[in-house]
Structure formats: structure tokens, C-alpha cells
Length: 203
Image 1 (cartoon, rainbow, N blue to C red):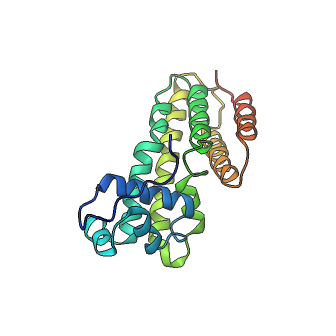
Image 2 (cartoon, one colour):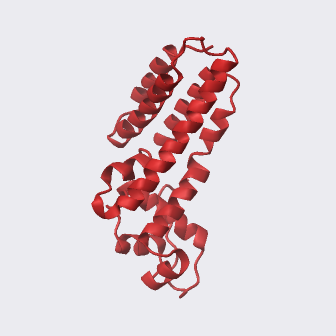
């Protein structure tokens, strides 16, 4: 299986596979972050000209949002599946193991696109940062709502601090992303997952 960014042939003016071009843009943003990716980087990786990029995707910010949508649809699909798990501990385990699998893949950049880009966005990219933070907040709310349900159902102890548990779980997930991006080994991240699960109060 090839792990390199797939480039679209430049030999056909205005004719290219939009899905493949967007996938190439996603890989680049994921590797370099929003601000670290230039338009020249994008056109080279996508195999298209700037006019074609603007015509198909809009400007760089609009392209990034489309790439982020693709990332959430394809790479973060495990999140919605995890939230459907029958117990809070299984929710936590599927989230942690899903993140572990994503962040240690040999064919994808390390770390989380949403975390990488949000911490590197400066003032000139404030709208991108705001969108990233809003998406992360939405995910946080979804996890908290699932944990609240677990408490109501008796899966979590009556005195469980749901907000604290959610903050803890999200902090572990984000920490895994940062560590993966910094070169942590799969074994190190697996140890973090196991330690986190051993401390979970649910069944």
C-alpha cells in the first residue's frame, strides 16, 4: 500500500478528480497545519493550477474547511461509532483506541488535524481557529451528553463528576495527538490508553 500523497496529473487542463485533489490537500494540511501550508504547496500536491483551485474549492480557507469536513467524515468516523457503545467505559475505550489507530497509522500524518491547526493559527487565521474550536466544542458536548446518559442509566456512579470525566477524557485524547505528533511510539501511546482505562469509574 502506497503511503505517499497522491498527485493528480497536470496534463489535462481543468480536468481533474476533485475528490483526489481534496484528499491530497487534506494530507498536506494534516502534515503542515493550516498556516504552514502555502498555496504553492497545495497546487503542487493537488496537481492543479491556482485558477483551478479557486474555481473548484474557493480560497485557501474554504479549501481547508472542505478538507476538515473530509477529515471528520473519514478519519473521525470512529467517534460517532464510539458514542453508540453500550457503556461509558466502552465509549471511552473505543474513543481512545480509535485515536490510537488513527495517530499511529504508517500511511497518515501523526497527530490530529484539528489540534495541530488550532494551536498554530495566528491572528491572521482567527476565523479558521474559531471554526476549529467550535468543532472541538461540539465533540466535547456530544461526549458529555453521552456520559450524562450513562449516569442516568446507572452505568456511572451517582456521584460521578460527568464534566470532570469528559474533560479528563478529552485531555487524554488531545494529549495523545500532541505526543503522536512529537514522535511518541505506538507502545507509549498504548500504555497511556491502558492506564487511562484502568482509572475509569464505569463498568
